[in-house]
Length: 120
Image 1 (cartoon, one colour):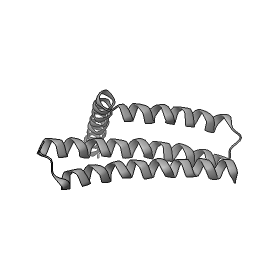
Image 2: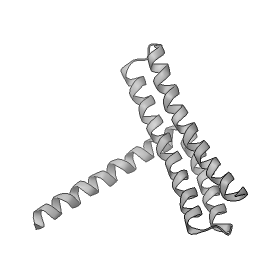
Image 3: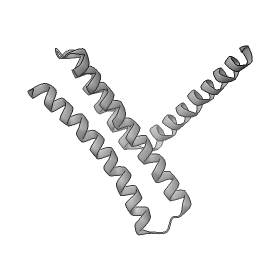
């Protein structure tokens, strides 16, 4: 049992290290990740400043984190597409555009949540 727990702890530690490496690499190269992070910090500050329910606050914070996750997935997909080939290909463009659209839709969801919370 102790060996199993130690193995799981090592696996978790590796996951943390790899996740931090991914965040750091994206942070260093992706201006949009830095921009979305600033938007999230401002959004979180507003969510904690306004009189919101715990559910409303959780929704706003969770959607902000999902925007960052979508941006990281977009960055990963762009990196893979560029690694495979630098040649212009309509399928590569569609893949990148779809990943970008996923970020946009996630951001829109966050905006809609803010709109509903503030107006509703």
